[in-house]
Amino acid sequence: MRGTMTERVARIRALTLLAAVELLAMGLWFGVSAVAPQIVAEWRLDNRAASWLTLAVQLGFVAGTLVSATLNLPDIIRPRHLVALCAILGAGANALLAWGVSSLAPALILRFLTGLFLAGVYPPGMKLIATWYKSGRGFALGVLVGALTLGKASPYLVNAFGSANWRVNVAIASVLATVAAILVERFVREGPHALPNQPFDITQVTKVFSNRGVRLANYGYFGHMWELYAMWAWAPVMIRASLVASGDSPVLAEVASFVVIGSGAIGCVAAGLLADRIGRAEIASAAMAISGACCVVTGFFFGGSAWALLLIAAIWGASVVADSAQFSACVTELGDPRYMGTALTLQTCIGFLITTVSIGIMPRAVELLGWRFAFSILAAGPILGIIAMLRLRATTAKQTIR
Image (tube, rainbow, N blue to C red; front, side, top):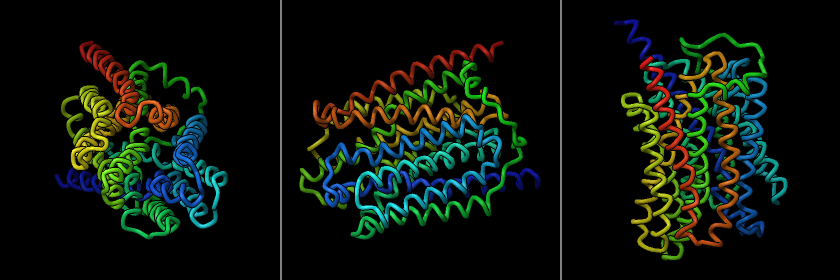
C-alpha cells in the first residue's frame, strides 16, 4: 500500500508540475493577439493584417511540428530537455517583439518563430505525462490541455488588468515561459512507463496512418481543429465588437474573453474524467455535438444582452476544447508506444495546418455574412469529427469482441 501511495503522489506531483509548465509557457501563443487592438491602432493595420499576428504562430507551429515529427525529435531526445529548450527560445522570440519591433513584417517573423518553438513544448509535454499514466490517461491529458487552455487565455486577463503599455503585457508572457523552462528542466522527470530513446526512423511519419484506429482518431482531431482555433482567435473579436456596440466597458470584454477561452479548462478535466469511464469516442462526439451547435447559435446573441452572449460563449468555450485531449489519448493507446511522440507531433502538425485555413477565412465570412452567421461555417468540423469518432468506436468494439 505504501508503494502504491508513493507512486500516486509521484504521478500527482508530475501532473501538477507539467500542468504549471504548460500554463506558463502557452501564454506566448495569444500574448500578441490579446493586445491586437492596441497594435492595430499604433501600427495602423486593418483586421486582415492583424489576423496574421495569430496566423503566423499557427504556421510556425506547423513548421516546427513537421520538422520535429520527421526527425522523431520527441522520441530521440528526452522530452523534458526539448520542452525546456523550446520554452526558453519561444520566450526570447516573444521578448524581442515586445521591446524592439514597430512594424508588421518583423513582428510576423518573430511570431512565426514563437510558434516554431512552441512545437517543442506542447506535443512532448503530452508524451511526458503519458509516461506517468496508463490508467487515468484521459484525465491526465485533460488536465494538461486544460492548463494549456488557461495559459492561452491568460494574456486577455493580463491585458485587462496589466499595463496600459501593450509591450509590457507581451513581455510578461516571456517571463512566465522562462519560469516554465526552469520548472520542467529542474523538477520534472519521466515516469515509470517511459521507453528508452529510439533510433531515427523517417518511415514513422507514414506508418502513423497505416493504423486504422490512429487514423480515425486523427480524422476526429482534424475536424475538431477546424473549429477550435478559429473560435479562440475570433470569438474575442466578436465579443469586443458586441460589448462596445452595447456601450459596455472594454475591460469587461477582455475579462469575458479570458472566461470564454479559459472555461475550456473545466471542459477538458470533466471530459477526461468521463472518457476514462464511458469511452473516448463517446465523450469526444458529445463535446463536438455541443460545440457544433454553439457555432450555429452564438452569432444570434451578437449585439444583444451581454450576459446572454457570455453565457452561450462560455458553453462554447468549455465544449470546443473538451475533446482535444481525448484524441491525443487515443493516439497514445492505439499507436506504437516506441514512437508515441512522433505520432502526437504529426497529429498536431496537420491539425494546426488546418487551423490556418479556418482562421484565415473568418474575416471574409464576417464581411459576407456578419457576426450572426459567420461562425456557422465552423460547424462542418465537428460534424466530420463526430463521424470519424463513431467509426472509431465501432472499430474498437470489433477489436474488443475478437
